[in-house]
Length: 279
Image (spheres, helix red, strand yellow):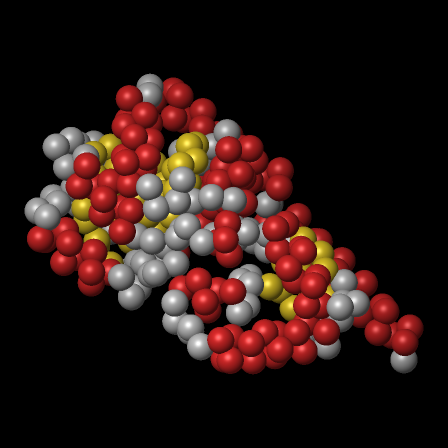
């Protein structure tokens, strides 16, 4: 059995605030410890996961195996993308994915409020989640014509949406657990070849900076996010396109889908051969 760890437990439960009872968190930790110690191989989506997972895994091998996206994100989209107000016209900053507590979407509302006088700068938030209704209420209450939440769309339309945006935005809450996490949208954004603003800290921000694929700003810092938007807005198209190319090149070097499939096959074959030798 091979387990691919996408989140750290029970830390994720505590960080999002969904579970605060210490006894429950301790119980979850013991269950996770039991699972980790009774599989043959643990794969982790972030290099920063290696240490905390190894502590609970005892003798189970732990290997880094990052997320990826398929080739549809790197090629010009062949899927018809619905028209979304604000996307494709002027300067658009698009966030795509879960709109929840972990994403600290309050920072998007704050940045949109700070930039509301810039009529040609539009924030488009695609997706759904526990904080979407709150964002809709705030957009209405603050008269934010520059903040649009069109809802969810089929996953096959995402590459086309991303490629139409001027800038792609990823946010996470300012929590230690999330500093170790690399949201899968980072790889998707890089593959799409658009400049990225990483409003988070830790591994996700490090990747965007290392790839020279965009700008990284502190998590939950609305003024810093607004400043980063303006910096990209004031750049030339050539400069922004270079960031997009950098991101796509970094994706192909480190997160290429076919290469990672081959790696996974090797991991599975290795585990299988060890099992055969034991029997």
